Amino acid sequence: DKKQDELLTTILAGVGCHSRDDVRTSTEGSWSNKNKATAVAASAAASVMKGRGTAADDGEVQPTSTSIYERERQFRRVGTVAERMTGVARKFVDEELQKIMSARMEELPKSIVDDDDKLYRTLLRDDEFRLWAHAKQRMEGKWRYHLITSDIPNAFVSELLPQRIFVTTSMLEKFVHTDDEMALILGHELSHLILGHVSDSNTLATFLRTVEVLLLSIDPTEGVLSLGFMTLLAGSRAALTAANSRDNEAEADALGIKLSAMGCYDTRAAAEVFDRMHKHDTESGEAKAEEAMSSGGSLLSFLDTHPPTEERYDYLIRASEEENAERYSTAKGGCGGLRGIFREMLEVNKGSEKEASNA
Image (cartoon, rainbow, N blue to C red; front, side):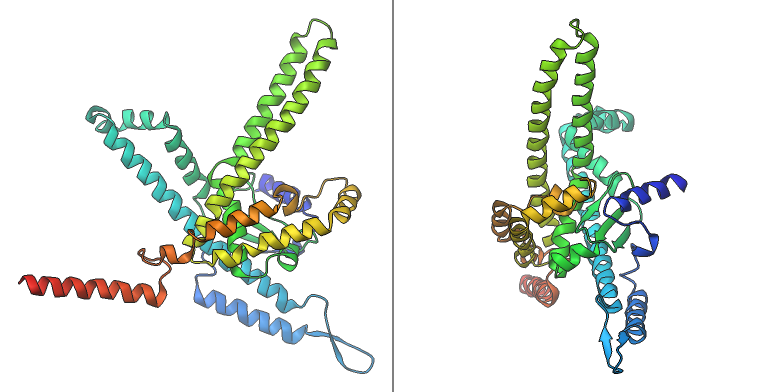
């Protein structure tokens, strides 16, 4: 509708995109459909044949700066990885909600469990249940995946426009070079959504602004006393927001790498994207400052909101030793491939041999 269209325009402008012609969109289900995927590949091949380059004076074909094939490849990477990761995240949330609900029902008296209304009201007072119930609400629906042509490297989800993932071409060109790396980045962003970090940040900001307004309204000194309080509160707000952001980033890193492993991606290799971003951030500090000034600070890149520190990279490397595809190789529908099939058949055969020996 019109409201959503206006919000999309605002979000796109935030990464320097002002034309819908610079946005490619696919929907959930497109990439799991083999016919659709084949059609996209064929379209890419046809585009390459038509737009391979431009003819120079000597008749030799010169390649374009960014080939149409490269854009199709980026579009496919965003779509296929995002589709798998949203599916994994949705399944994970469903399982966590089911676990917490089952645990609470075992703890509660039968008089509450047998009464749906009482059970519902009781569970709503449970913080953990509410966390996963809200996460389920955020993950439900048919997702859309946007590839945005932009010089600003970014990848994000937004509660303003739910069930959408946004990735810029610059994010892929500068930092994300493999499906594994794409999965880790998207896993991180989906984790922020699942854990309610966007809502929490908005709540904290609203609370602090409310305190400021309240102080101004009750100050009997016509602003003199409030000035001191406001200065103190401004420092406290910055400290609280920074601490909240650090905690949120750590939580999203932990859940994000778990979701990537559950999606059968190589988390050890994927962590290299944070090392790449850290080195870029370290080497281009002055250039970044100039870019921020030229844009008036209105354009934010992924690195602005997700500081890629060396400690963060080290954490992801350590976490990948536990959170990796191998951990989920024995799960039903997991990452085992041929090894998983072998183990499953081995268990069946061992069970048959045991039954035969007991007969």
